[in-house]
Length: 445
Image (cartoon, rainbow, N blue to C red; front, top):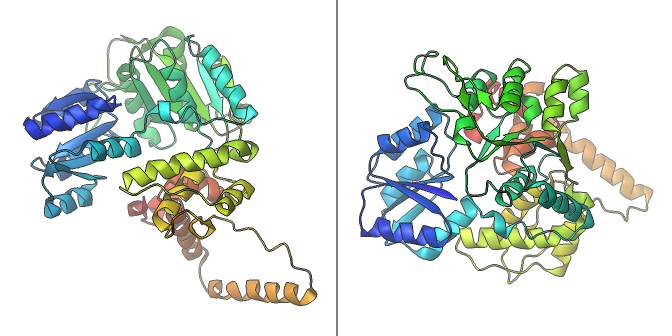
């Protein structure tokens, strides 16, 4: 885990650095924000950014967003400076860490925001998932491109990180790019970088994700969402190991391992003209297909227990055990949102559980099981009447207002996770983003 700190150097910062390094973090300290931003532009990646409240945190977060650096931010400062903490969190920081540094707190933040792969890779008890892991171990040492397929939320990025960590490139960068989350007109610059003046707003040269991942691994998440016009440039990068910055005059050599993921049927995308067949074969040297969570029932409770530990630590709470009934409820559910939905469910359960253990009342599922004991016509009629009455508030409303409410409620259920919300709504991530823009719901995330 790569931790970047922007702060004046002092004994408190050194304590924080030591605590982070004890959690296996690679730490780099910058006194000035322009030095940190310059390092990011020139390919030094970061998984977490810690900023002292004596810095311009709102300004730094704004610059990160403008330059499309998707790095989580936590604030830090001396003592319980409530005002500074509130201002930092309002600006977009995820946490406030008071100094002197509490090693356990720093560890909990690192665990919650950038969890170490080693702690999740062991959670595999089902034969279906074990077969995938066995194949991943077998191919990790090679440099061949890998295509990981499976439903949304099945853990494709986790497997990609596992492959990187067990490869000869493990000590180099692992860079992930979500092709569906970046607007089409910006994805080329994001991947390949740009020269100063290449387009309006390109005020300085910036290396892209290919160069940032040099010597390491580049994950192209949801690669099928990439515009067909950009795919030839990706194909050349894979074939020739060379990329061209936007506005650049010379090619740049890159040495990276490509891993791509998709939740779509790529052969169908090829038939539809949305994906190049030659690019598919370049990416699909090795294919790993992840099973949905409903087909790996043996993993549900161990994963749930892991998430309980994770979010209990992040909220400075004692981890509670799952009751037997709660475990049975988790196993009985189909998990349409897969592991991501399970994680969100257990996050809520940690916060809602009031007794000595996590019971069924704390586990709120998207679809509660229907009562299987409806055995009389009267009960059926009552149920039908209730359903009919529940639809009355929709009468007289526009489709747009109902759709807007549905999007807001689904995002709330998914704790702001757009990928899972899009899956539940039955639309693509790009369509969801367009609807959020149309309904001016960007603040929902």
